[in-house]
Amino acid sequence: MRVLARSCWGPGLVSGAAGRRSRPPWRALAGVGGEDRREARVREKPPWRVLFFGTDHFARETLRALHAARENKEEGLIDKLEVVTVPSPSPRGLPVKQFALQTQLPVHEWPDVGSGEYDVGVVASFGRLLSEALILKFPYGVLNVHPSCLPRWRGPAPIIHTVLHGDALTGVTIMQIRPKRFDVGPIIKQETVPVPPRSTAKELEVVLSRLGASMLLSVLRTLPESLQQGRQQPAEGVTHAPKVSAGTSCVKWEEQTSEQIFRLYRAIGNIIPLQTLWMENTIKLLDLVEVDSSVLADPKLTGQAVTPGSVIYHKQSQMLLVCCKDGWIGIRSVMLKKTLTASDFYNGYLHPWYQKHSQAQASQCRFQTLRLATKKKLAKKIVAMQQCIK
Image (cartoon, rainbow, N blue to C red; front, side, top):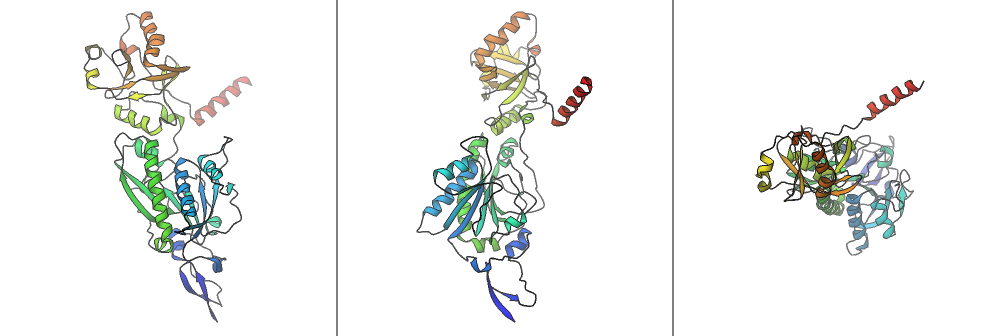
């Protein structure tokens, strides 16, 4: 006996003897299996029931677009919208939770995903792996809004690494989630954009979040067709974008060029201030600026013997000049116990040092690379201390 069963790809045949049917094309492409036991409830066209997973400002822009689409009853793209986010130490919660509460959207805290029925899941900057069992609860799978041109910059910090490595082009990829691994699923839609010169990661995030939100709505408007046109990611060009750590912020004066230091500042400066060592004290570099050629031509600067890390106060421009591998960078403010302008740092620290060491060269007055202990080294140190106590 043969019976007709509705699937998300239209009518299909199910064998009564075998009791099984073939997987929808998107599942084969995304590498997930299993049967959809809610076949009779699958919608073949909008409006969709969406469960959104997200945390940060990038994700909030995607959620904002989904909410606006839900409010637009004329288009009829989104019928139901609920939110999953992760717990936060802040009482206000993460940006996604804040927006969800403001707009009175139902919110679930991971690993709770609610018990409702949905057509498709959407992920943006969520940072948690979704199990195959969870993915299979969505007839159309789970879409991910990823701010890079995959397979370049797979991982949790693609925008930071785009800026850090000086990429001229970036973009957004709408892909399908696969279980067990991040950012390896098939590409549904991808668009590229140039990276604005001297753009910070925060500024680039605004551009890509808007692009990603627009692309997602475009995919949702033709969801079954878009999924059928998905393609596997190429094996070539894979790079990874791991989370940045405090160690990333330590400037290596002998190794890094001025361009590399400025990229580092633009990539992470708004998250983790760049750090260095001054007379055995950690100092944070708050406001980095490029040094004008007229400043570099100053005879007081060119006539001194310097080494990477050497610090000179330039009175006319009121900034600290620090020598690096291939030149100089300018610093307008630092934090050493408290925030100090370059003038404050000179008057309180540099000038007294020169008075005390009147015969010293500029090369002796310098910032040094801060070496933070890794978890492994820290663990060894703790063990050694415990052994001494015994």
